[in-house]
Amino acid sequence: MIFSLILALFFSIVAVIFALGNTDVVTISFLTWHIEGSLALILLVSVAIGIVIGVLLMVPGAIKRNLALSGQKKKIKTLEQQLDQHKQELDDHKSKVTQLESKVKETEAQEAQVVDEINQRLDTL
Image (tube, rainbow, N blue to C red; front, side, top):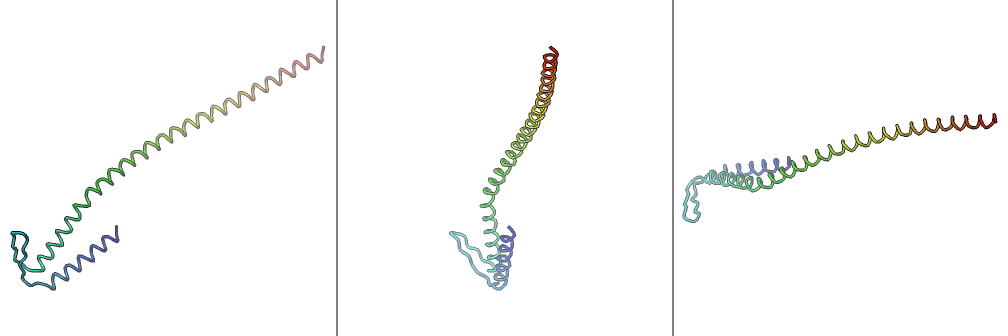
């Protein structure tokens, strides 16, 4: 982008220097039109028209890129929200697994106590 601006500035300066060096009066004929004026003025107007045409030709592409970019940004936002939701669900599942593991340990401890009680009773018999 900066390179393009520097290049455009360079060509503009060259066009102005060239136009100022050629101030003779000339007649320009285009189809049925005949324009008489300073060569410098005609050159500068020609360069300005060329710039306007170039900008007008670039506008549709720029609009298309901006629309595509905004669509991609919306898609990224949606995907980030889905990712956050999935992370929350994963955290919920991890906490449930942790709770279940603690319940399993409690149950195993209770089973061990029951087995110990049964063994003690069998030993007393």
